[in-house]
Structures are given as C-alpha cells and as structure tokens.
Length: 188
Image (cartoon, rainbow, N blue to C red; front, side, top):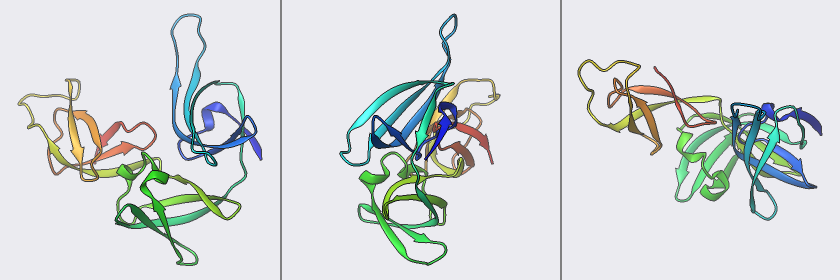
C-alpha cells in the first residue's frame, strides 16, 4: 500500500479508510473563499458491505491507497443488466453488473479501454479513461449568433448521459466529456 495526497485520488480508485477498503465513486476539489482551506469532497462505497460514505479530506492529507492488481480490459457490450469486458492479454471475458459500475455506465461505449481493479482475485473497481468522446443524440436547436460565452443548454448523449453544453453544439456532433465530473470539455 502507498500513501497519496488527497488531490491525487479519482473515481474508481481504492483506498483504505478506517480499516476498510473503499471504492471512490466521485471526488471534487472544493476551494472556499476567505480563510477556509481547500479540500477534497469524496463519495465512496465500502466494497464489502456496499455502504456509502461522504468524506472530506484536506488537500495536503495523505490517504492509504490499497494494493490492487489492475488489468487492462476493453468494454465489449451490454447483456441485459450486465456489462461484458475482455482482458486484453488473456482474452477472457468478465461480466460486471450495472450496480457494480454505479454511475460509470453512461461513459461506456463498445471498444472503450478501461482498467479493472482486482483485490484478492475479485473485481472491485473500474477506472475509466480521463475523458471520453460521445455523440449528442438530443439537444435544443442552436440559437443564431450564439457564442461560447453564452449560456449552456442540456444535451443527451448516445449513452443516456445528460451534459450541459454551449448553445452552439448541435445534435449529431461529438463532444469530449470529463469522466470524473461529467462536464463538457470541448467539441471534437
């Protein structure tokens, strides 16, 4: 196990906290103006019991990262309520439930490369790439004269994820989305 700064953790990581192994679901860097210091707001799930916990860590605080075996895998397809992945070295297939992937399924497109974390030969987490390119399936029509500085509108992607995008983004266009925050990054 290795200690890392709280600012270095991201969704899908496994950490040891209060003598239990937790999978990070969401993490946000929060800076409050004035005298308050910055901190990481982290939502995590106990991999044994499934209970969730919201925790704040100071940005300079060190957190114990659990030793896991990471395997490079590729998402293949969805089968009912399960998502099928293939090990890129052994070509073995692994099926993970939608509950297990909680909140990460909307970033998965066939042939997406991911890392699946194993602890004691059991799958315990999935790390998505930093960003993914998704196609806009539904959005309001563009307004004439809209600029990048204008207001945002909601857009639904091919995977069902709803993202706030600038007014100039149209249906059928591809956008890059941050997998940690779910925010629009740029048009591709």
